[in-house]
Length: 376
Image (cartoon, rainbow, N blue to C red; front, side):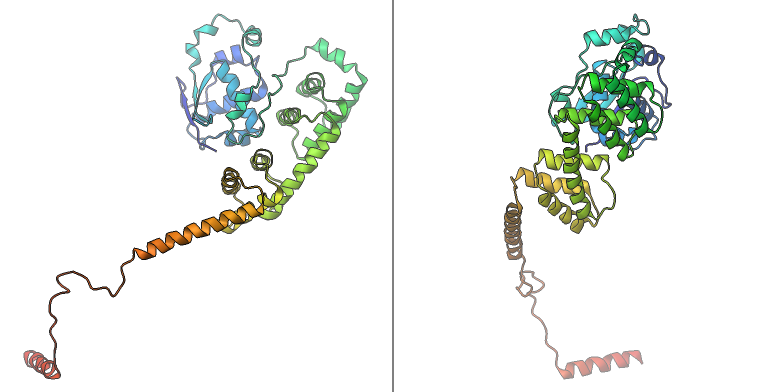
C-alpha cells in the first residue's frame, strides 16, 4: 500500500474543528464519513504515524472501501482535494481552509443537506474502486442510504416481518436497538431488498466475528449486494467458501487466529482478482515463510502478483518458472566466473618484472655475523 502525503490550508498543530464544518456539513454527512474527516484533522498534530488507506481503515475499524467512499464524498463537497498517481492510488490529501469557502456562507444550517442531494451525485461509481490499492470488485455500488423520517419508520415497523427481524437483531446485539440500527435495518430491507432472513444472518455473521458497530455491518451488507448475495443460502455458501481460503492460508502460515481485516483483503484479492486456487496460494505462503521466517502477507502478495503477470495457472507453470530462473541464474554465474582473473597468471606490473636476487648459505652466514657484530 502506498504512503499518502497530507497537507492542510490554515489548520494549526492542534486538532481544531471549524464551526462551518459543524454547521454546514455535519448534519447531512454519514457518521462514518465524519469519522474520516475528524481523523484527518487529527493527523495534522504531527503525532500520527505514516498514513495509508489501510492504516485509516484499521484505526476507524472500517474497510478500505469505506475510507475511499468517505474521501470521495468530502472531495465532491470541496472540503479536501485528492492527488492520485498513474495507478489512480491516492498519494496526497489536502484539506481545504473552510474559512475561504464563500460558496456556502449564504446557506443556513440544515439547508445544505437538500443542496447536496439535488446537486451532487453521491453514488459510488466504478472509478471509485480503481483508487483502492487492494481492489476487489468493480461493480457499481448502491447509492448512499437515505435517512428515514419518524413517520416512515413507524409505518414500516408495523410490518410483522420487520418487527420479528428487529427483535432477533436485538438478541444478537445484546442491547436495545439504537436509532442508527433501525435506520440500517430499514435501509437493508427497503433499498438493498434484503429479506428478513438475510438481515438476521448478516447480524449473526458479523456478531460471530466480534463486530457489532453499524459501519462494519453496513460495509459487509454492501459487499454482499455487490456480489449478488440476496439470500441467506448464498451468504452461507460465500462464508463457507472464504473460510476454506482463510483456513488454507492459516495452515500455511501456522496462524491460530482468524485473518485480520487487511489480511482478508489480500486473500480476497488472490482469490477474486488473481483467480488462484488454494494450492497456488499455499505455495506462495510456504515460500514466504522460507524466505522471511514470518507470515508476511505483503511478501506473499508480491509473489502472487508476479505469478499472475506471468500467467501462472497451476503448479506446473510454477515449476517451469523456477526452471527458467535456475537456468538464467546459472548462466549469469558462469558468465561472471569467466571474468575472474586466474590467481597464477603473470602480471605486467613493472615491479614484478624486476630480476630477483638469489642468496646462498654463505651469504646468510655473513649477514648473521654482521648483525651480531653490530649489536656488540
